[in-house]
Image 1 (cartoon, rainbow, N blue to C red):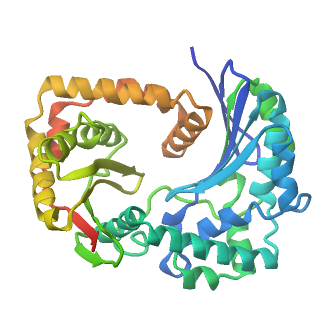
Image 2: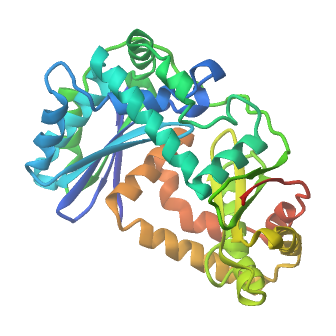
Length: 399
């Protein structure tokens, strides 16, 4: 039986906890602020702030932040998502206090030294170049651009010009405005008592700060566009197709997961069978989902010979439409696959903590434990409705 608890502290910070009988604990701190909240003139600021939170606080240098955790076998990292930014440390459960101390310190008290801002702008510029140089990563950025208007359609990394133009005062001001307890969640998954988690949260995250209370609903404007790009040195065409999925309720996420699994989720999927196994047109073909509160879309990625792009596109479109003919036994098998994959993923404390935070920001963390029931409630009619989507965006990068 899952042992889950939640408490909201007097300063507005939400604390959630899952007790596990293991010797490793994940401590995760998240703010309800990500790339989606940026306008076009500051695109990339959420990601820039994430980098800078590791560059020193009032009581720790950059080196001390990492060394303090590494001495006990811990590791620290972070990521910026469209709707949240997340910092996480994984370490032996006996060192819970150290984990809560360090993560609260970098989360709330980052100091943003001027010299670090200049240096980190260069680092992020190289990160932007790296993703651009990767054909597959580049196609995922461009398909998003073809699915949504600015600013959401822009890369969450921003542009080199925008990033290098951001000033220390601007970055620090934004951090202090949005990194407030009322916008934040502390999640602990591991072999620790909830009372200890709350006590440590009150000790190390007891910051009182007024700022901007972030809203859940944002205006995201969709579009349909199809573009191509040629690049020297690329031997294979990288085709990506993108489909808008409905943003009506949480239930649509589960329908999307089952739909994507049947169509392109693994070697038993329809696309893999039709495009690779039967015709030998690709090495890689799959679907992926990006599901948020304000947007939902599915992509199909295929790597193929440049002369075969139109054929692959047509087959993928046809197989997408044929999802209207799905049988009850196929739906049942897909549900088993999705639930099984979820169980395997949830073995890791990091993965569970992320999903608990996602559900907490969407409504309540406890919904995470209803995953199997929600997947099993998906109907053939709901799958067929998604299969009725006729328009898609596309982007192809090739020689």
